[in-house]
Amino acid sequence: MAQRSIGVGRDSFRDRVAEHGRLRALLESFAYAPPFGGMFGKSVPFYAESYWYAMGGLTFLLFVFLVLSGILLAWLGPYWWLTQPFGRFLKSFHYWSAQGFFFFAILHAFRVWATGSFRGRRLLNWWIGLTVFMLAMGENLFGLLARGDWESQFVSMHSTDMLFVEPFFFHLFAPADFSADLLIHVAVIPVIMGALIFAHVLLVRLQGVSEPLGQPASKNGAAEEY
Amino acid sequence: MAHGQGSQHVIPVVPADDHPSARPVRHAFYKYPLLAVAALVVAVLLAAFVGSPNWPRETVAGASTRDPGGAILAFTQELAGTSASTMNESERGMAKPADVFVLNPLREAAPLLGADIQSALKTYDAAGADQRQAWAAAYEKALGTITPESSGAGDMGTASPDYSRTSSLTGDFGPVPTLVQADLKLAQSGFLEQYLQGVEPGHLFHLVNIWLYDHPRMLNAAVDQGLTDDQWGMVKERGFGVGSWYLILPAVVHVKLPNGATGGGFVLDNLLIAAFLLFAVPLLPGLRDLPRRLRLYRLIYRYPVRGELDEPENMPRAEGYHGRAPMPGAGI
Image (cartoon, rainbow over all chains, first blue to last red; front, side):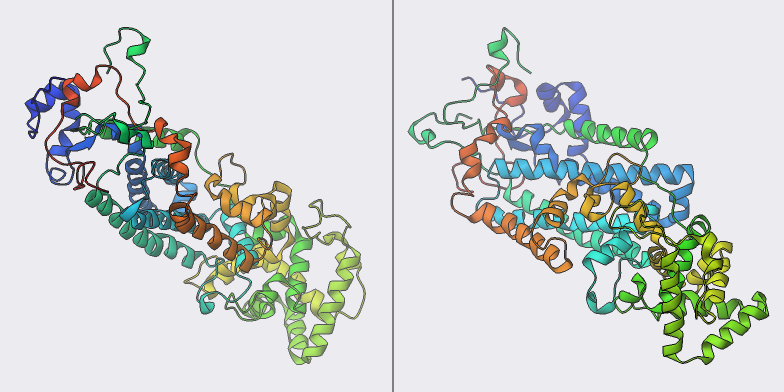
C-alpha cells in the first residue's frame, strides 16, 4: 500500500487540516496549544481510535464537573442548595454528574477488562483504578449523608444502625453527624481520589495504550501492516 | 469515514486472528471538546428538567406535631433508657439521652414553663435512680396499652401510642407524664430543635437526627416507602426514580449474602469482593484469560473498513504512541 508522508511527525494546523478537515482541526487545536500542548501524546494505535477508549476521559471530565459544582455547593451551604432555585439546580447538576461518573467509570472498567489492559505492569493501575471506584462509592455515601434532606437524615441513622453499631474509629465519627459527613465528603475523600486519579492518568501516559488482545493464529502470519 | 460503495465497504473487517491494526495514527482530539460539551449539556438538561431527590427534611416540630403520640413514646423511652439513642449512646459520643432530649431542655426552659413543670422537675431530681426508672418504665408500659397493634409498616416499624388517650392513663408514673407533655410542647414549638442545635454548634443536625430516629415516624415512613436496607433501600431514593444503582454490589451483599446484614459481615463480604476484583480477576489463571477467550474486545477495537487505512487521517505517524509506550512487538 502506498503510504503518503503527509502529517508524519508534524502538527501544524495545515497538516491537521489535510488529515482531519478544517472543522476537526480547529476543534482539536486545544490539544496542540498551551497548556495542553505538552500534555497530550499525538498518536494512538488505530485500534484505540474508538469511543470505548474515551470512557476513562469522560469519567475524569465528570470528576471535574463534580469538583467544580461541589466547591460552589460547599461555599453556599445546605439551606441554599435545598431551597433556592439555582442552588437546587446546582445540586441536581452535581447529582447527575455523579450518575455519569459511575456510568462512565463502569464502561471504562469494562473496556479495560475486556481488552486485557490489566496485564503486566498495568496491574498497578488496575489496582489504583479499582481503589478510586471503591472510594467513589464511599464518597457517594458521604455525599448522601451531607445532602441534608429526608433521605440524608434517614440513611445517617439507618447506616448507623447497620454499620456502626460498634464504636467506630475510636468514637471519632458517627454518620449521624452531618458536619463530620460534610467534611469527609468535601475535604478528605475527594483529595485522596484526586491524588489517585492523578497517579492513574500519569501511569496511563507513561505506559501508553495497552497492546491488543488477539488469538494465537496471528503467529502464523497475518502480520500487522502500518 | 468509509467511501461507501456497498455495505461490505462500511462494515469493519475483523481478521481471523482478531488482531486489529496497530498503525500509529493522529489521535482524533476533536472528539474530546464535542464529548465534553455533550456531557455538559446532558447534565445541565437533566439538572434543570429532572432535578434530583429532595424530599423535605423532617423536623422535630414537624414530627411531634403530626405524631405527638410518637414523641411522647420517644421521650418516655429516653427517660426509661429503652430508646434507640440509649442503645447506641456510646458510639455516638453523646451524654445520656434522658438528659440531652428531655431533662436539660426542660431545665433550660423551666423559668418560662410555670410552677407545675418546675415542681415536676424538682420531684424527679429528688428521686433516686431506681424510682425514676420505675416511673418511666411504668409509663412506657401504660403507653403500650393505648398503642394500636399494627403500625401499618409491617413488622419492622413501631406503632405510636394514641395521643388523644394519654390523659386517660393511670398508674404510678410520678412526674414523668408532666415532663414528657412539657417536652412535647417544647418540641412542637421548635424550641427543642433550636436547643439541640445550640448545644452542639459544630455538629448541626447530629442530635436532631438522633432524636428523630427515636420517634417511630422516620423508620415507619422508610418501611412504607421500601427504603430500609433490607428492602434494597441502598439503591433507592424517596420520591425519585433514579437512585444509587451503582451501589448494587454492596446492596446484594447486604440483602443476599450470609451475614451481610450485620455490620462486620457486610464489611468483610465487601472486602472479599474487592479482593476478588483486585487480585483474582487479573492474576488467577483461567480467570485472567477470560477476556481473551470471550473475545469481547472485538466490540471495542476499531477495525478498519475497506480503504480506511488509505485515508489522509490514517496515515502512519513516526512518533510513539499516546504516552511513551514502545511500539507493538516490543513488549508491554
